[in-house]
Length: 283
Image (cartoon, rainbow, N blue to C red; front, top):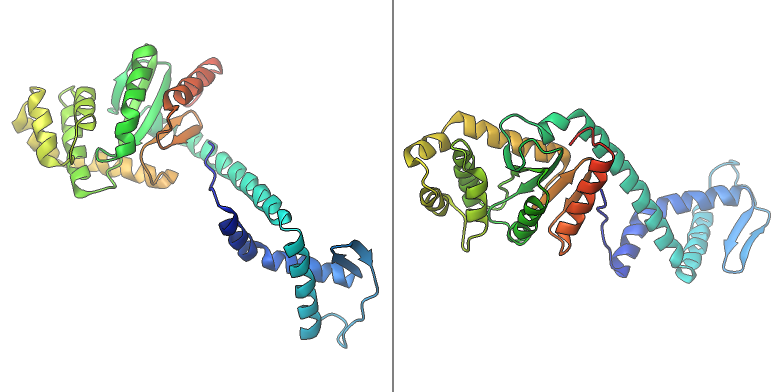
């Protein structure tokens, strides 16, 4: 997974100042105990007069240390960017490790849950998962890329997870989609509604379902059923547990692609090829 927060220069400076001021001050205090002075001219040792208690610093000493730190960082601001980059890398590694462990433990519910909404080859060797919302503009933008993946790769399996977070209409449309799945028309419905213009809601979703020749009495009964309600809640709970709070969000193996970048098809194709070559144990 490669998901890093982007800061502009001013935001980075503000963020780092808050995160590291205490740590830098602590470092400076420790250094001062050892008689080490940081300054623009370099690092040098000098004697430090102990306080009366032998361990605590006076307000005057603390202020002097603060001034030294401020002066050094103002004259060498690139240090703060180096620290931020190191923190980003450390955080990313920790997130990757957690995601990998979670996916390994919950692979079945993510990739191979019985009754999942599937497109492509239902027996495919590699599964791609997409969390989406029918009212998400980026999901609409990414639809042709997903269609192309399915068309080009006859052994890929795509699982769709409903994540209706944008509006009440999104939830209504998701329920119709899950009802359409129960009549074997999920992928047809998904393409038709996500590829249409205008707001997705109960009315527009039912219109699409009717155009596909579905049994509308059964659609409406399934929409209101506990079965559909619980399935939708389970998929939203899974997304929350995984920290997926935006759409679209794609998963392949233990990696993810948030959003719908212009090269989405290429990224998905690369991950599918990678995990197919390495015999993915989760997807």
